[in-house]
Length: 164
Image (cartoon, rainbow, N blue to C red; front, side):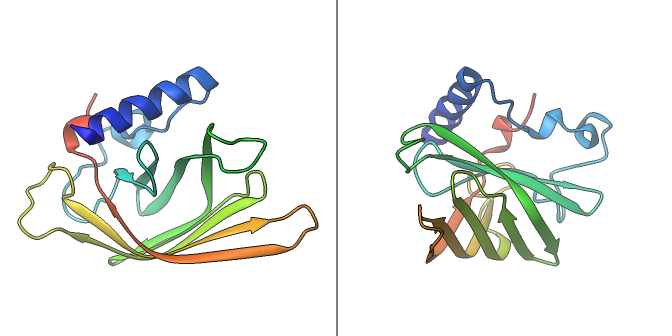
């Protein structure tokens, strides 16, 4: 239930800002029926760092794209939803890597794995779990960069939230 509220709040915030979320059913691959949520397809929404933030992954014919939606922390975007699309991304085997584009002097890099959680059924909340190292890069007004690294775990949203 908490994930549903998180998704609704995030989508409402994006709608009010004029941003269009890249939802799985809005991709050409989904509309043509080429993707499924079985096997090695990691497409879908995942939790991110805080309540109301999320990570969207889309795997289409072996190419990974996506973005993260988070609350801004700087003076210019504090409390606003900031969408950061991937600049580079790859998924091979169970290894996941992405680097976001820079927005307001901030960008993220992630390197880790995607696995199915033991005891979870397809479509359940937390069925897939992304674990690894997330590095948040912040550029200050003088051009200096600060990097903060942490170990993270992101869980998939339930499948019924990813269906039209």
